[in-house]
Structures are given as structure tokens and as C-alpha cells.
Length: 215
Image (cartoon, rainbow, N blue to C red):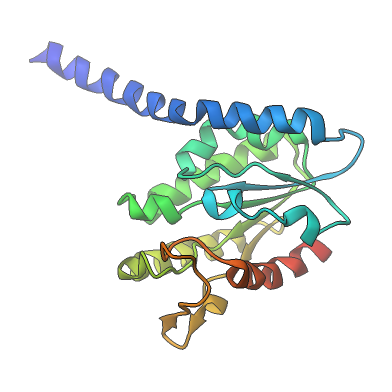
């Protein structure tokens, strides 16, 4: 019995570590891309997180006054971003970091507290390397595909917002409410899958994010 307990304790964490390796090729592609594009002599703003960031293709066009690094990787959860914080955030020495995680976490039945604890670890790693960097937590968005889980998303967003009250360098970008029409999610801001946004949806995000960029 003790032997099997030993295996349970040590094999399970190893399995979780292996999960992150499914993104290895995508992370390599991102870092290779910015080996060419990134100018270390210019201040950088990093946008990172899951696919809602990854497919925001006109970020640099939207914010031409800044050197934008889009290191989003589709399907990621907060624990995946934590595993790749060095490659996707720290290597760019950003003055500001926008993080979008939690959407896939909730869909994969993770509890809001677990997500927040992981986000805190990411923030701590950023703080260790760059204490003055500003961090903006983008609210988990509402969507047609995941509307049945809205209460859990709203709970997570309240915790995100609460976290920002404890640190003047952490802010909360509320994209949730602008994406609603009354008590329902706007349906004309998504592509066919009901999860990812079209140009109109990103127009809403742009209007929310712009003030944080201009500060």
C-alpha cells in the first residue's frame, strides 16, 4: 500500500508537468518569430494568454506607438502560462503585461481560487525580474459557447478585480460587461463557434484596453 501511495504522490505531478509540453512547438514558433521582430532597445508591451489574445492579429496596428509582443497560445490555461513565463513574458523585459487566462480554466472545471493562486505565481515571477512592470488582468469574457458557466466566470472576475485592489501596479480590464446586451451576451460579436470573437468583438476589447495603454 505504501508503495502505491508513493507512486500516486510522485507520478501525478509529473503528469501535470508533461501537459505543458503539448505547447512546446507553439512556444518555439513564438520565440523564433520575435527573435527577428523584437527590438531590445525599445520598450515592450506584452499581450499573452489563450486564443483570444493569440488571434488578435492587429494589436500592433491598434497600438502603433508601442512595440507589441503577442505571445498568446491557443488552448492555454493559467498553469501553462506559468510554465512558460520566462519565454513568453520575461525575456521581453516589458513595461506592461496584459494577461488573459481563466477562460479555458473555467471550461476545464478549475476552481476560481486555483486560477487566482496560479495568476499570483505569474505576477510574483514578473515582479522578481521587473518590479516596476504594470500588469493588466483582462476579465474572462462572456461567450455564447460557454454562457451556461457564466456564474463561475463572474466569480472569477470578481476575484481578479479584488486582486488588483492590493497592488497599485495591477489593474483589471473589464471586457465582460461591454460584451453584454442587458443580461445576455451579444451574439453578433462572435465567429461561428460562438467562442472566439470577430472584428466587432475585438473592437469592444480595443475600446476597453486603450485607456490602459495610454496611461
